[in-house]
Image (cartoon, rainbow, N blue to C red; front, side, top):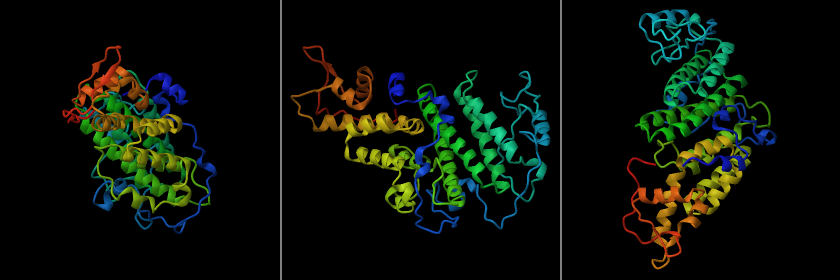
Length: 390
């Protein structure tokens, strides 16, 4: 379900493409009361796999690991660029005048390499921080491009941002500028999460969406470690609380990959300022309302308090939550009193016609009474969630 422009305007939201440059969070003033040594760099962040070495895409290296200082001043090393021209391995965004065998330094962007290591890589193959920052800005500008479908744009940016993370890791860059870059990449994956979910009806993009969530989780893991490494005072980083809330909100999705420890255990690892921040209070409240079936308060809170990025992250899960609300109404209602769809649509923040379609997708019949009011007869035994999702 796509929220209407009017509702987004009521929330004070900008168009989704501008979510990649949101205004700073107000959590800047929250005081930090450490529950562990502030200089401690290890952090038991949410895991995306059973192997701790894979968490965070192996993007942070220990201080005794060798690291390089890159000297490549272009978005793609000349050696790789020449090889990919020869192999005609150029993305549509990298082709000079549409030629699949020609590119230029202003178009080619270094690809992610799964097997690269510090031992066999040269300084000339690695881009220093200023080049990585400019490359990331170039990629983020592509996201709002309308010349190509979003699936094509996402596939390109998805790979090239992984390469950026790889170069940051190779050079052991973990300062505030790295934090800003990781925040931008997290925003990209959140916006992609929303936009890919809208494309699922056109083609089977479930695997692409799954991979996007996987990389979102890895970016978050590394970002949380970077926050911890750079904790030099009793103040949180200005966006820290909001970015921690994203991990909580991901638990609203029923088909999201397993994310390590339960939320209750994860909460105990957080610093007090993060746990008590407005952003985390909001995220925890949504989880609680969803679990207890208080859908009116869920959608009221979402409309009143969600930031643009929080709404982007939650929106693909909303029809799952609405379907759960329909299930409760169907099984708990009184058979002689059908439920008015208009009333339910107001609670669930969805148009009446779209709610009717959702009921049909879930195997329920709707009807119209003698006054012309659309109703949902309750106690139907045909309710089922669609196997393909919403």
